[in-house]
Length: 163
Image (cartoon, rainbow, N blue to C red):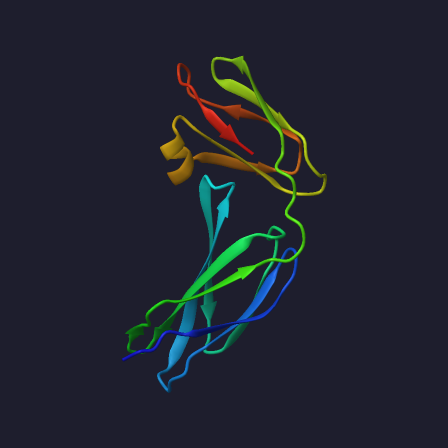
């Protein structure tokens, strides 16, 4: 039986998490697959996937959001197959940024000008879809460090926007 890997949180800050991965077995490990999940504004679950080569590993994941719960899951790739998943949870330190205030205005049949307020020098995600279900599961999206963006949409549709 292949055991799950051990995920140990080494440290965390407002915008990063450092963790180590190891196996408690003599089975040869070729690498790990790590998923980092977090929920954005209760509507959208985000995920970042890391593919890590080698047996032992210390990783640092940066560009995270302050005071946000993260779930880290990992499994090992071994000579006998993939291990079961293991999970850890951690909340980054600091104060979570205030949600931006979004305004969306149709420019024409296929373009919407989105503008919002919020801090400078951060990256904003713009998510949009024609239903709440689509907004949660598979929205259209883009990122920018500006405080506005023009989004191209299909004509004769109503859209929901989230920044």
